[in-house]
Length: 155
Length: 103
Image (cartoon, rainbow over all chains, first blue to last red; front, side, top):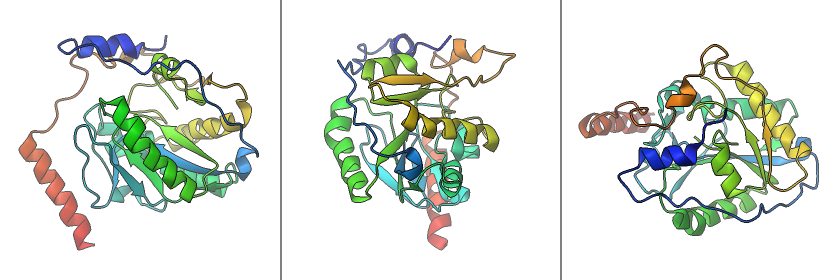
């Protein structure tokens, strides 16, 4: 049985006013014009990944980090207050499967892995901030990188 | 991707792949590259397979066939491990900065 996270959030934060989840009326959709094996795919994680000495995230942080796709595991760190990060700190591929995406690009499953990958810290209370500040910047990055699609891994 | 199907049904992204794993393990358990690779590969295949807006494909992977107790505990009070104190966190952060500035 999949976990129902909306009621769990209400209970976990029962001392606060109930969180207003985003409710959209429809799913936007642009069909891909070519098979994924010919596509440039960008990877994006909300798990709070940082590269080398990139600054740590903080609460209500709408900034993002560019992660070079040739980053080695010991060059990646995790900061997030909203999920248990022990396993991600041990193996970042739990929430930021960079090594796996590199392998799939080499094997031709995807056309190419966009460089850089991106990460932000998804524990942002304000959906407006994400929509109006973070998302447009990511869209600009993806357009600059000529990404055909992006792969968003939540944490 | 998603592990929280009710949130995804509310947000309605163009396409989604659901894996029923505890939070913090979206693309697999630590140190299991073969399973991680299967999950991510399935997600990439979904780009070709999904043609109807808002489709959520559910992958068949099971976190632990012998123990589903994590489903009762995930995202409930007491589920998050205690965080390091501010002092410890700041010290660890200073160490990280120093390590990479040296290199």
